[in-house]
Image 1 (cartoon, rainbow, N blue to C red):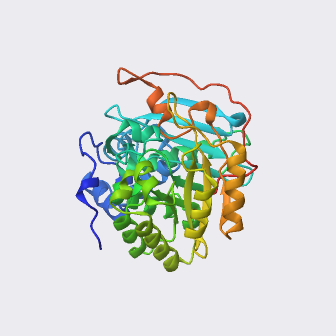
Image 2: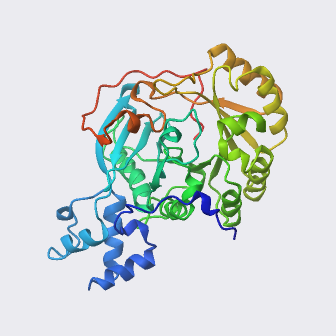
Image 3: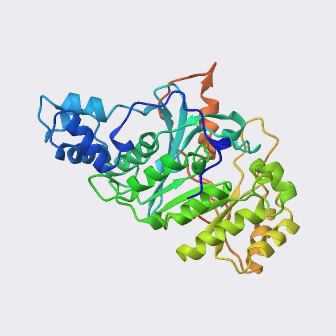
Length: 391
């Protein structure tokens, strides 16, 4: 198995206390045993956690005199909501979380007529330094623990089950690792999170592999590791340019693993799984949206088991980068489809609530200290070209 390059190891400072979700079921049962309780108490704790129960008093299947001790030791509070912002008539809800060390991360829950998707963060900040990304502009603080990542999905599942999102009680159906951070730079903890998302109750959310998407800017050794491990989750590659000259600027890690190497690794994943991968492409005005780049991308992907997900850029405040105008978007789509490449345009939800990853965390810092606010009223959605999120 290929080891990840040390250059992408995030700082370990401030890592949170151990949590049940950091452990495999076997490790959790052993931990409960160390606390003097029978092993099956781990299953009971897990069932509460994955249902979003946080108050020990509600864990009535546990002995009254052991609830506080068990919850304190294995279910420490790791995510504190700082604010919720709603859009799209309440069907999109972005949450800013404060971690135990003050770091800020974000998740976004999006309810559609046929599904509910949560976009989760895997790192506090990001070290990939993509210049058009709010998170990349802020740099990397640290990796999240598995429990901090899983907790975002659990909170979304609980919000759906409790009917907090308009439409009545429902079920979380999809998880995408497209929030803050580069998921494959935090491989071990993201891998543990995948296990928890896919494992049935009581030790997981029981999602299908097809409903989970892992995004990467192109860490080739990690893509190959994911391939070797036999998972069938959806792979999304954030390409953003079809040529190395431009991609070196937009995605600096391209100077280490170029377009050809990234696509080769993604092709191997597709061959092993039999499933197409998604190519994420942020359309940036006058930067990567020219007709010749659409043609170049079409030639690159024609005949491959790939699908292009075009993303009109959600610009950050004060940035020189802006979204492509609609005519350019339409021509880009037409040229890709003419080349035989399946193409959609992502639903541009949440622009009015700092919807791009990292925007809310950046806006919420005053002297490095997060402020506290309550939810704001929602507005109706805007959708580019009538297409939807591919998740």
